[in-house]
Length: 581
Image 1 (cartoon, rainbow, N blue to C red):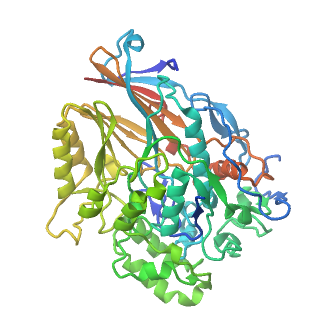
Image 2 (cartoon, one colour; image 1 turned 90 degrees about the vertical axis):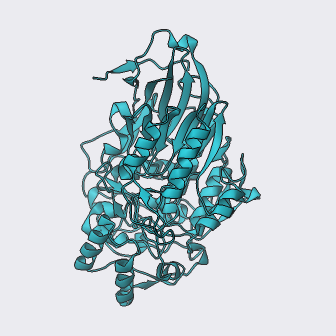
Image 3 (spheres, one colour; image 1 turned 180 degrees about the vertical axis):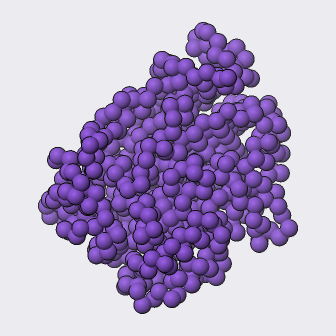
């Protein structure tokens, strides 16, 4: 039986219900499907039922905040935690940090290894940012009638939260376990939420630096569920006794104008690499819109906010099972619900992007940031219509980024045979390197083996097959992924599978991974979780960029249906993972 030891730090969504139960809810069809707007480079805790009014900012929205100086904070130091758990709406403050644990499932720790250690590489994993256009017409917020977690009150602040995470990564500079400089960052998919061109622009600008206006439709005002008058949704700027105010959510005047106001991102100071997820390739993260109806609806002038309970129940059943990968049921619902829809300002920026457009955007030299141009993707990907590649992490360490989305639809993943065979060839080619595999889906959510109509006769390969393949190649040391919105670290056949929680659901985390050779036949993989740079305590009158990022975290913590499960258990958080080499 393996043992887990305490260790002293060295030098130092929601439209689709999660498939496996490994996570409470995965961002899905309910999260935005598009975006407009764009980038320009050049008090006391209320009890249940209380809804305090907070004045908004004076005058017009404040100018974008310049990059801040923030402390190099990790969850080893402190973690956002509720100050009072006896109230319905819990205000956050500084909680106790999470200690580092030594995991010896795959190798025993040997004394003196810290003095012999050579750091091979250190990097940051960001996953499931879900930058979301909350005003997108194809969103299915109305599924909240079947469960309050079907829509989340904090979704309008994803861009502010992501920028704050970039600020924290920039503040770190060095690995918290080894003190070695960080080499690069990598995303592991669901960078956007609704596969929309505006969201893709927001994502690249957040990562590379520049000004973002997270708004679509009417440039002068918000048009979405939070001023719709429907009691299903939190209305921050009026006295409507909505679902969330009954749970203690506050009234915050000026919130919506601030949420769609301009945001400045400093951009990562590190090179970064991109991996695609199902939300980056499919409508609502699950639908292959072959009819084109949803694409047309996305850029149109109608939006649905409420449907009969029977219709919502039927749609929820279809979506949660993933049994309609082409979206026929949703399309039929939208066609027959036209009289229930309301007018919104149309926006071509809400159009979906194709895999080729995704690649072209990454390969645009204007989006290079701190590099590399393409962020892992090359013209070979364009020529071959592929979203997978290899890249050098360091001397003797190779990264392999996979594309686990089935373009035929469905929110679970798999690999097509062409990519599966390519992966095996690359593992052989890099037999003398340590290999880190990166993907969006994890092994237990790669269960979609439905054939892709664009690849007739070609089989798809599930997570068990990928685990078996990786286990046959002793150069593989880690498989790093996301998708489930939950921290999980599991020993596999000779390597570690490291899955990291999202940055949209509380506790909104990213992960630093440091790889070191201990000079004794073992490697150590150090994992350290980080939050954004936003302060744990919020000021409900502060609607600045930083104030909104702090509010993003607190609203997420209080979101109906939110649990502690995404944080995982202590062995899934800050660790030293040993393995033989």
